Image (cartoon, rainbow, N blue to C red; front, top):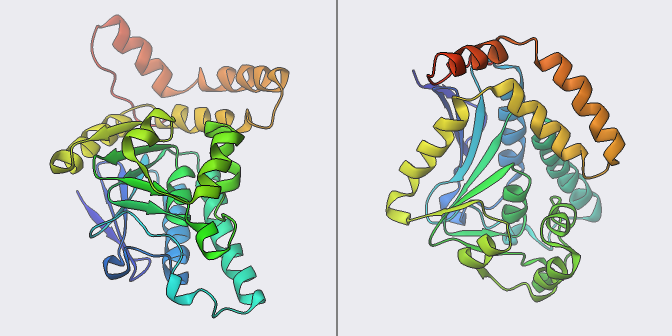
Length: 264
């Protein structure tokens, strides 16, 4: 049963079969970020955090593109304190995405530019249509990257390659993004929505508590030592081994059937 969630005029949000679908909805501006959109995204994630019906989140864009990032029409008009507060609002969103112990999947088509690219990078996986292009266009308007790009991209592809993308500010194709490890899967545009739906449905049917803990520890590994992660694995495994999903997984294996995970 599909349930609509009202969080912002600039977003379309619904929950269906364990999946919270968030669609950026400013197609006339290629889904450029607005204060209302960012606040709505934070509200949707707060809902997802406390809603046991939500097992996975997707973020996509309406119209011709995923997102063009920052609203160029507003650039140059904000006072420094307004920019500081706007980026603070964006930072809260990025931190909420990483803090959420549920998988977030970005479904990208068209352009993912600037902060829109970084929003996708803050997700846990990126699925992309064949027409996708990725560009970190900040330097073309004399800005540095925001929205976590200077954190995520160097860790993903190495600092040398990342700096080239930041300096050049030129689009890369989806094939290049896939070869660099930025994109997980590339699908034909005409079948994109169906392929994303199939992929996300498989994640939603999995052991959601386990996935959340994998996400948490994997993200911590970027700043932790091997010894610290080994200890975190030991503590977490001792706890997760008591869950209903673990018991169901064992039973399904013995009975040679697919497990029916409940997220408990």
